[in-house]
Length: 262
Ligand code: PGA
Image (tube, rainbow, N blue to C red; front, side, top):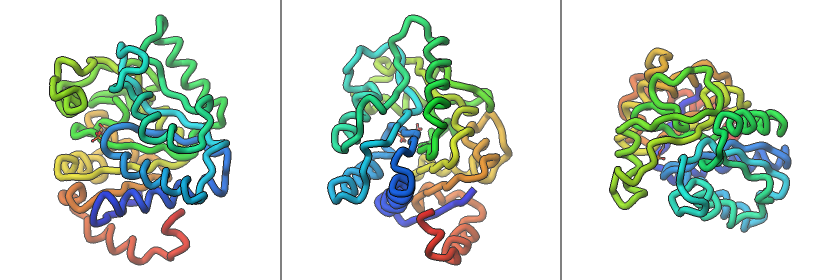
């Protein structure tokens, strides 16, 4: 795990965006695993800017999102499909047919989930998976005690996650769906490379547990310690509980320049 500590979320987004630019320029057919929530917003704005400046061509890129709420009507503004269209897909030259999210409105959920994993495989697997982290250590909607080898499936949200996400539903936790379809932890671990972003004090405990705690299903993000190519990019607040904070900074300052956007 490489831990990169930056002064603020803007710098983190810029740093992450350079990794996307390099990847897509090297592999125009790259397969991206994408995430929703507040965390990736600045990164998506950077990617839109890069597209507008002709620095990235998304026309041959394929995407798979981590998750989708179950039961929201199609086109609902709280659906993750709506979020992705609004914050990224409608602002770049991506082919919408190449953008995938699980559907929260299918008759046979199990079949749909198996198909989602099969589509990822068929696309050649995910080159770069983007993750946020929940205050409870979840990745996607893989809540504490999720199987660390799980595939895409339906999960029940914890009360903490419902409370955290109520802000998108006018502050009313009753309006937050209780279920979501999420890529599994095993599916996430199959990606070639992972970038985990986290900002703010309320993520500090989860980051500490994920990076420096024991690998445990109680902190799903801790499994990333077993992945060979993970960058954890955090602001000073999210890094504030890391015991080896200074060491990570020392390591990063000594990286050769050519490695920094790799
Ligand atoms: P957030 O959510 O980006 O809205 O903080 C992250 C997550 O729950 O994975």
